[in-house]
Image (cartoon, rainbow, N blue to C red; front, side):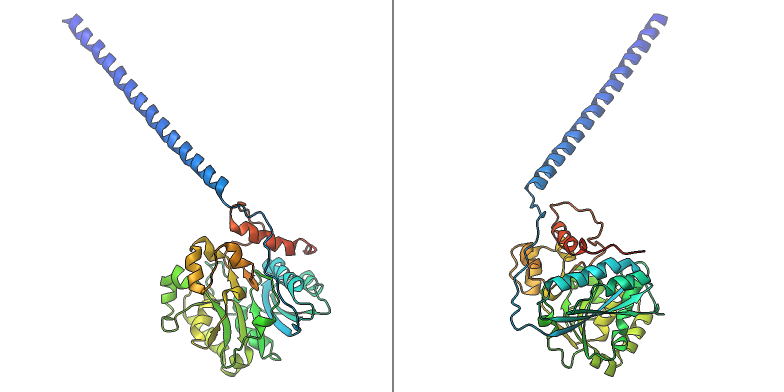
Length: 349
């Protein structure tokens, strides 16, 4: 009996070893299959990257006709110390792409900047480009901190009060490149309207947010990063009080942009996309959809950006210090931004 019992013990041990061996073999096979799948996916991705378009080139801008262009353009910007490099690049790009006889007056509202920053801005002046620096104090309005929009941007509410001598001004965010002369845009008819702006693709990209603003009847949501502003009407109708009231009593993600959209109502003129060419949305919305939305006949991304009067880096992704693949069209735009950044002297702070 003992011998028989021992035999069964040996058989059980052998079976256990076999079962463990089979389990280990199955695990090995599973890992090998998984590795082969990952290698296949990686190879496919490498193939896609190899075939993807390379954007390591200089964008060729649409030629402009400067014959007879000699108007005065008043431009307002807002900046703090964090955006000083962007502000200087915006002004530098405007200097290099303006028509020779155009005169630009830049009014830069600043918050918490260094004296050396102000000196750097003033150093950008030429006989045809004037820079006026207007230091401001932090405003006491409700502010949502969990957003890429800075509180400094709320200063745009006060442009009409800060520039009482002007009836009209072109406001531009600091994170822009000005790539063609501004006279055509500046001469847009805004009589009887508060402002002119470009509609924003958030109308369908972030539709739930936009619908909260009750803009269905108007039929569009505009981007407040570029606005041709009728300062005379804004002052006459005390739009400032309405903007302040809306901001203090409404929790909105895009703060000043939402406030302007709601408060100005139908008193807005739509500008073509070239006057505020926002790069961000082309990462999320296909080109044919965007072309249809703006009534354009774009076939390539170069068709979108080459005629831009103002290129707007309208998202948290900015060109300074950002690492992107050469197969990402943002690389092409980043190269363009650095073209106007490289020849600027470093800030002294």
